[in-house]
Image 1 (tube, rainbow, N blue to C red):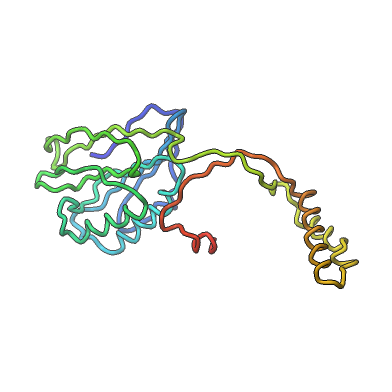
Image 2 (cartoon, rainbow, N blue to C red; image 1 turned 180 degrees about the horizontal axis):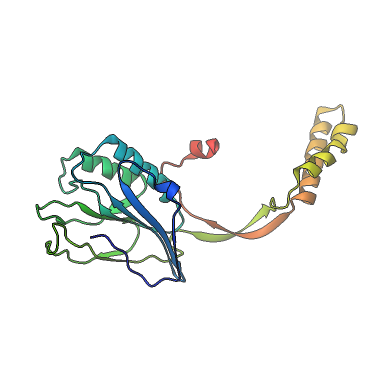
Length: 235
């Protein structure tokens, strides 16, 4: 049984376009109140169907979209993968995806009447989680999985003062018109060094006029380990 309970001031669904996968079903909500912020995902993969590569591709895609959000993350549900079997190839593939995003699967006891662990409870590795004892199945062939999770709103983000340009009101047409009327077009020096200084001086002066520097609080947080310098350059 997969359910999430909390007293919250705001609970909004993540856009369904993030969750349109053919290999499993998912519901995703953003839960936010003072001192609490978490993205919660409930996953269901039909048991009779064999696990396909499409499932791992889709699940990796979902994690890439949501695991880098600056808040706590809780993924629960019936994956119908025998994660308790160390030699199970499907369990290994799932573990690899979790490792890439620094996530941890918390259930280590059977959740099914046949003795396998199918219901999973996944969080960030550094989240404080207290797993309650899992009782044998009673009302169905699955057990209920219950846990206490600490989801402080500031756990994944830090705030710092930085000097940034105000691009919100930047008018590119006015800026370009001023460039055309500047010395870069009308009196560009013949000397290379002087031309470079003119270029730098003109653009900096216009940027300071139309996109001035401001001191702002910037929220930052860690990205997934796969998000390296090459990814940043492509972005």
